[in-house]
Image (cartoon, rainbow, N blue to C red; front, side):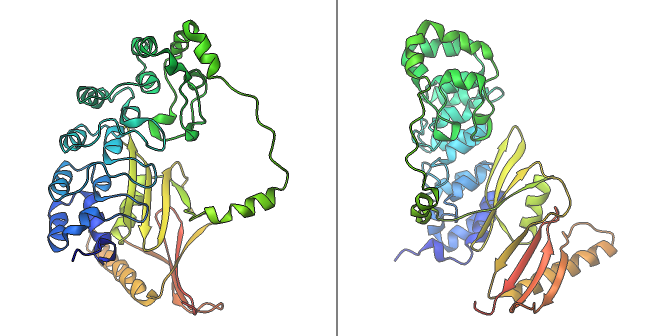
Amino acid sequence: MASNPSTNPSLPEFFRACADGLVDAVREHLERDPELVRARTPDGSTALHLAIRHPSALRLLIERGAAPDARDTGDNASPLHFAAAQGLLESVRILLDAGADVHGSGDLHESGVIGWAARPGNEAVVRLLLERGARHHIFSAMATGDLDLVQQVVEANPESLARRRSRFENRHTPLHAVFAPPDGLGHLTGGFEDPHCVHVAPKHRNVERRAGAKQPEQAAGADTPGRMAALEASIKKSDPMFSVADMRATVQWYQSIGFTVLHQYEDHGELMFAKIGFGACEFGLSPGGEPGPRDVSLWFYTDRVQELYQILKDRQIRAAQAALAGSTAETGVRFLEDLYSPFYGGRQFSIEDPNGLALIFWHPDWL
């Protein structure tokens, strides 16, 4: 009988190996449990999503049966969407050769793979997608900054001027998007660099008028608390997001103490987002924060606080010993509180991440 990969205790290690491109470790995990190729992280990513930056790991996972068209549960996007967006030409080629859908319709941003890929500087990936059958739509054409291409798309299909972006990009029409860069994902949010795209519209103004703004509808009612309460059950979870000064150093620190990088996104070589997980706790990291402490802390509820404390204390001691020997190879851990019994019960200790964020591990009496 096939095993259930979600119950495998080595799952976090497997995901970490995929994200880091540790091919030998990935192979060892799969030899012990082949079903891990279909496992998912708590936020719904597959091993292929995590491994897109590492072609050798991608090939191994695909050889072992990983589905190249598996969608994540965040953006309903395949590994090809993310590889194309990040300009990973070799990974894009590997996924296409494995049968990944070059179109990728149905992602949450309603852009398809070509829409995730199209931007100045990513021409090689876009050319490969076009060679494999992808076709530009109005927004992907605009994102390239190529006015002639935009003209061709509109001439071939004037109705494209009536197309709207997803709700995450404010349902913008092409004309809206020229003047008001939308909110959304990575380069999809960056706007369109050539304002001359607006000159494509006048010959097709009737189409654009049909795509234009509407009068706002009348509010349904004033009972905001009651209406909100009716939707309370629709909220499934909440993840905090922290802005940090040095994304790579922060991610590496969390990995060094055993946390898992569940998902990450890069743009033009800069790490723009990372989802970190430890057990049932997940949180996001984004760039732009200032170093130093802040009035926020992250709590971890656990029934094994003593063991966690000992592991991190051992790391603190090893790092101190390495520093005395003149080595910086061991990443340290700074304790804010040693293990103790707080007045509200239970046992807890706390450490500090490189940005001054307090991580509090607490074993409450009721757990």
